Length: 309
Image 1 (cartoon, rainbow, N blue to C red):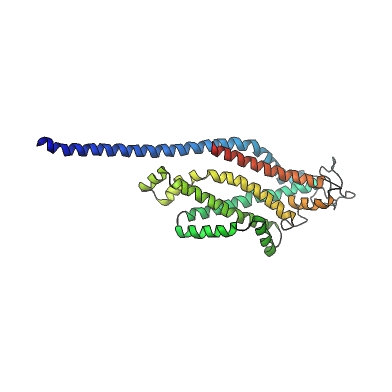
Image 2 (cartoon, one colour; image 1 turned 90 degrees about the vertical axis):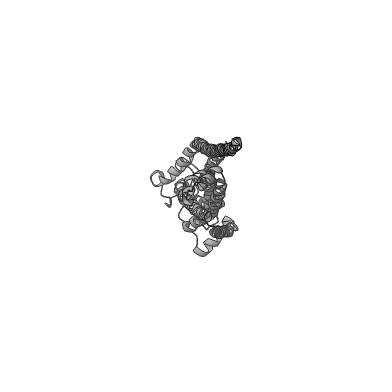
């Protein structure tokens, strides 16, 4: 009889010990999962720095030339030089002169400044607004549906068609160029961050934090955003490439920067009718555009490679 009375207590003790061990195993799995994510992020940022270090000097070197254009350019971009109509490349004019006697090199250096403004103002601004929309959409279901439908409307239009429509309303200029790039990048970054947050939200360490009573904003700030930033850096480099191309394309077809203000796209457009007289009229700005696009592409590839490793 005494043995029968002791047995239920023994079974209860064994069940309690088993439950305690299972709880410790779950905590160990959560800790290991979180550690794996932290290590992966550390590896990504280390590889990112190593990869970017190889291409950043060339990109920032060209942007520095643009920023210092008023100092290092041999002539004013709109100065009309006497007896210098469509001169070929020489020691006095590295890229020759254009059809109205202006030094092409000086105009190219000043045209880089437009790309500096587009790359480091319009793209980050569009990324920031898109990320804010993504954070709001992951918190509330109704806002998520409305945000995604707005993104669908913007993404339904190709960037150049959107640019033409906006320029038809506002007229050409640097303002429409910046507005189009910001508008194009908002849904790209918004959907990318939303997808990444939804993925991280399902990981065990995020669920454990929620079960332990952590608030929604605390989980978002402490776990979701830091572990969702990797793809944003890759997309940022790709978007800078698209921004350089889009600005050049808009200026080339006449809806970007207004003459006589120089931009790489408008210089290339002016050179088309004069390629036989001065090929460097087009080659010079094309080399700069290709170098900028290639540089940002190399950065994006370095980031993507760091993510895969």
